[in-house]
Length: 293
Image (cartoon, rainbow, N blue to C red; front, side, top):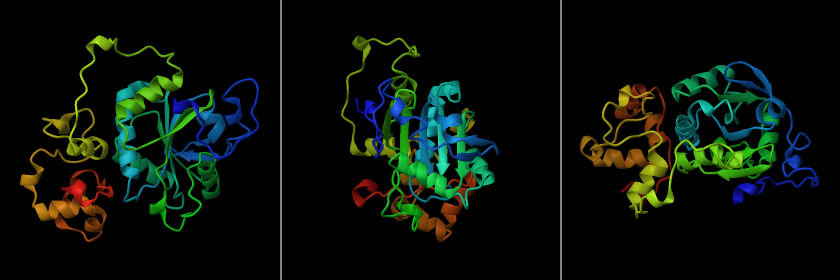
């Protein structure tokens, strides 16, 4: 499993007592960060030491995939329920600390209806850059001139065992939840449901459209879900059943291609949806013409 291979660029001298010891206090800086709740914490000693964690680096006004990463982790939190904050910990660290103050991060967490146990963090830019470098998530070429050029930045791991792996925001939330809730605990946690391979459903071949919906859209949208607005956590975007009949095709095609530009232009329909759905903007998913069709 690639989960057993450290994902970091540096290679400290191998210690002899355990696989996780090389990724300890001598490797991770114990810099001070501030949570969206206003609490001061130390990165190594308070946040990751001997814990199973998911960490991503975002900024709150990102027009790209930061929102999708946050929405995907929101699904993971719903699956893991009250384990988040108990034996699994979620951390989102801003790469734009000058703008993303504790107050801004608190509002961002509220927009995404984030539950307990998930912390949004800010701090000194130099400290955050150091953390990104330690995790192998800092692009030296793009640096800070253009925030939109930051790489995909989700990493999961168990500091105590030294198991770390990069993860995609397009990954199934159920797989991410399984990795965090079982794999990284070395399968010590009892499964929630008893399953038998004999009862496993046959794999089916899914269409390109379903694949795109599952990886790009499902974190925020439903299709034909009744009473979705009265669910425990309201979907982050509108239900898409019949959307090609409800929206002009030319408008919808452009919306899928460049929602950020349409919001910047204050397109009336785009602005109405923004207001209806908690001021969460549709991210630009980098779809090509075939994807859009």
